Image 1: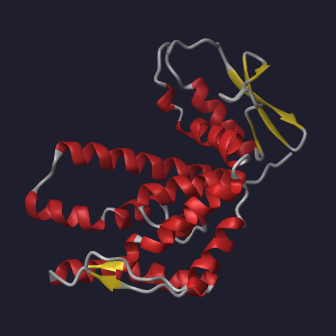
Image 2: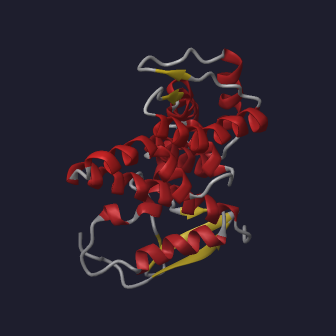
Image 3: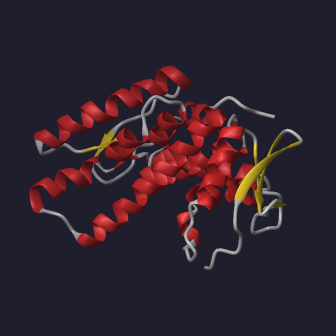
Length: 235
């Protein structure tokens, strides 16, 4: 699409910060005000718009897309989104372990087990582990505890958690990122551990590399939004 504005900025508005394009309030696809709860987050979104060239792909506005989702979808369908995110725990990546080869088993234990233990300590969610193809039947108490944790996120943080969890295939990894237990690079490495191990053995695949790059970008965008929402500077 062609750049239709000269400059982007922000303005304090109510309890948040409105994104402005040429001094006029920007809108989401559903025509709602494009506004964020912290100055840091709003400034980052405005900077994203300012950085676009004369012609650009809307997909390059990664932060803006997350914010649009929070405002247009998550705010209106919180219960459904909470359920979508929580369902990942039933088949969580980090609970499915290899029984061979020994090196992969070791890497999974070193990368994933600390996160499983952290979730148990942080949220009281003792998840079951399994090997093989079939998922483990997770304790209802653990799933309920994780559901309560997800429910506690506001719309913007829930959107970022959803994006990270879906990209990683793991609510454990998503929560660890959202709570600052790991960073984006660690979240990506944990989510692609098995695949990266196979690459070492058999080499790279171009299509798979492209898919992983997209997943990395999604995790990084979610992580950045979470960091910005933690920043000081609310209205």
